[in-house]
Image 1 (cartoon, rainbow over the protein chains, first blue to last red):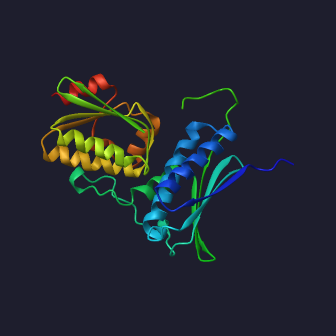
Image 2 (tube, rainbow over the protein chains, first blue to last red; image 1 turned 60 degrees about the vertical axis):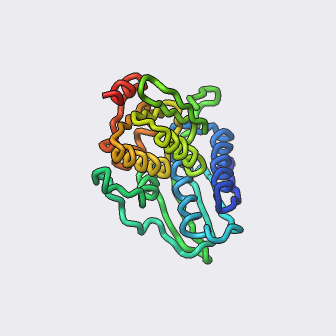
Image 3 (cartoon, chains in turn purple, cyan; image 1 turned 90 degrees about the horizontal axis):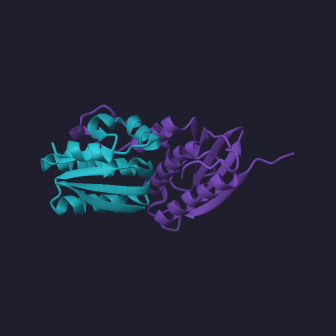
Length: 150
Length: 112
């Protein structure tokens, strides 16, 4: 029986941690020969989710750690982000106004809006005093050697 | 992320490369602020070498667009690949910006 690939990294709640998490996704992408065209939206979602965690939850405590797991499940690239910050469900945020003219535009809420729209599914649960955010997008492996643009 | 700056006629072309995300967007914000502080009034941002942009990058462009409008300058974007265009589209940003296919067209439009 073939086990589904999985990679977990524990990163600091800050800029260095965000960089490390993106690097881990790069490694997971390379190790599993994933299609870059399907992985970039996951990169964007990861950046949105982690920067929200840093801003809303654990940011005040620089020693906080965030667990990020990448997994291939039934043709989807699934990411689980777990942090021990205060309970905060980003999916309760109201959608941003994406039709307002320039002067009335506010950047708030765009990140979660992008995650919802770029991913096939997003779920939040609070479990054992931790926030668990899971997001996934359909993602095929590419034929090795058929290198796509970087 | 590297950010190239090239003067073309009266326009300044700012061309970031790589990822625009929460670890790199500050560099882009600084580069664009420095361009405007230095007196540039016709600014082109070329995304041809950008692999993707997240919402912090959109925030930078929003700030720059508002400043350019206040200072009666022009801002034109170009070279949006599928990934960048899709994020702009989802955020409803495409109607907010002058967007051209190529750098050449963008420079031409910025000069109008």
